[in-house]
Amino acid sequence: MSQEKLDDFIRSAYARFNEAEPDPSGEHKLAWVLDFYDRDAVYVNDARDPDAGIHRGIEAVRQQVGRWVEAYPDLQVEPLEIQTSGDQAFVWVRFSGHGAESGVPIDMELAHIVTVKGGKVLRVEEYSDRADGLKAAGLSE
Image 1 (spheres, one colour):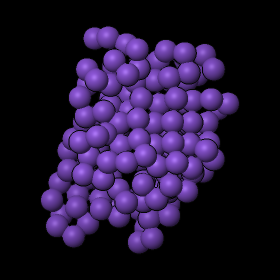
Image 2 (spheres, rainbow, N blue to C red):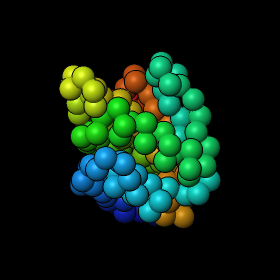
Image 3 (cartoon, one colour):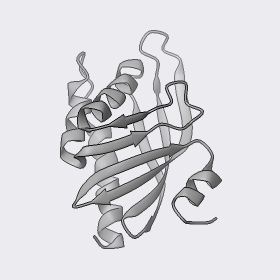
Image 4 (tube, rainbow, N blue to C red):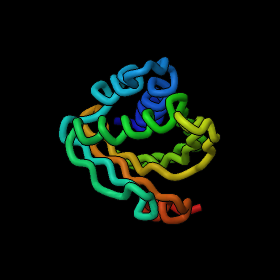
């Protein structure tokens, strides 16, 4: 996949998530996972995340995303910056929304290192520290 196509693919994945209308079941926010993720995908939370872990397989990824949507039904994940290298992309993203029960806003930024193979997301790794994310992607400031 060319760097331009990879950039477009990444942007379209985040846009699809953000455009989905929330519903009580959260299914609209989760349907995009099946379109963009490989069935053997792996999602790795940042080690500092309270729910740190490695989620293997598309169903585990759907469950992880489902936990976000359940906690923040109006969650938006906006790519602020994308740098691509080979089949990988460093994506600096902003998470924003409101707690389902508390209404308390969330506004945080972190890195997603996204690996794409065969037109599907194969792996996503989170890094709360920008420099760590860039290093993991083989990039620098």
